[in-house]
Length: 193
Image (cartoon, rainbow, N blue to C red):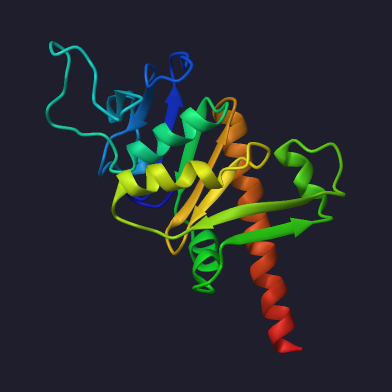
């Protein structure tokens, strides 16, 4: 994660059915992600509101601007960790075509890292139009989430990947990054032919 780009969250309480009554830790806005400490995380609720006790609330930091999208992912998946990264590969591949609404991959051994038992599967990751209106994105994204594919792309912006724990979310980020780099190189080779 470069500079202040991206955000990380971890769910710390159980999600109650049909409710926003859960809590998660999320990185504070504007923090350098290469130098995070425990003081760079805040506790928020399922509505994205900072909910630490007023005695311990830190007025000098605020939750990531993308907190509502993390909350939406928690509400619509079994995730316990959500990682959002901006890399050259995921930003570029998501912006290649204005009409792009999904990316598909099949037959690659690395697909097993997303939890499939075989490489002989086809996965499709949604690509969602980016917006600075996080309330809009939080409403839009859930209808495009496929529970068996732990990720989505915001067009020209970055990847959201999730998992049952931080290690799995990290593995999913790395797997998607491999797939995006693979596709970009594949497209480059086709262009040269």
